[in-house]
Image 1 (cartoon, rainbow, N blue to C red):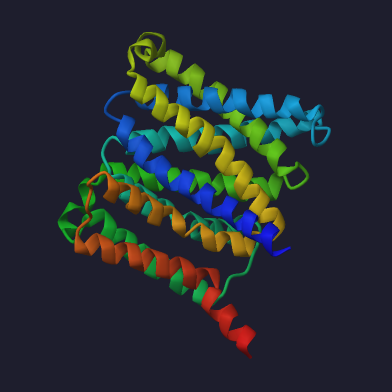
Image 2: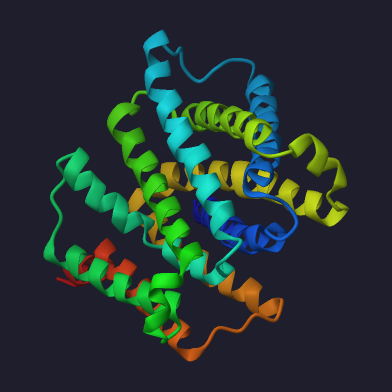
Length: 300
């Protein structure tokens, strides 16, 4: 039993590493490929792998109704097309660490959206955690130079990416609780991938640009498609299923930590104010999750 739990935790941690390193990978290719073309190649790879896994199973997880298209299409466009266009655009003008720390707000933003969309009630400690994390993000974005806040265009794009991802997450709970999570991911990724490919063909020149990309750029996009889009999601779903969403959510805090570690390996060193901001974001997320309060309750 302990060995099984250990393997599941390892899978969850690996998924957070994939997501954390995704920010470094996105930043690495930003100068070589335009946003829609990068996202289209990444998710074309993810689409093919998701459907290869599907056909290896032999049958679908559940029988979908025609009306489910009215749920899956908008969520696929919002969560996959919208997020990735904003993400790759952000990577042109912000750092990987900034982007990862802004994305760390997503669980708390999802909580706020849940209050509106799902009528969920949240406690005072959650509001406190959100405030602390927001202050941390401001420190990360500005690096202590608060006059630069208005010009942080990439960070604003990343805030938009964080918002649409949170909307996708809460929307899936509200409108698609009857669809198995892996099936939901496969269809929304497929819909978003098609939207990204069509948009790239209409607005950019992917047929001209993709053959000219270097082997390194293709390899990074392959990594983002296979590890950051498919394996990370599958591993995370296994963690949520066996450990529960609350325990798994604690591991999500490792995403910006892994981004920072990868950045350090490649020689990108944040300043002291950004490190303080990172600590505030992580503290805010932990407080908002109720971890400290649950720990005290358990002692009682």
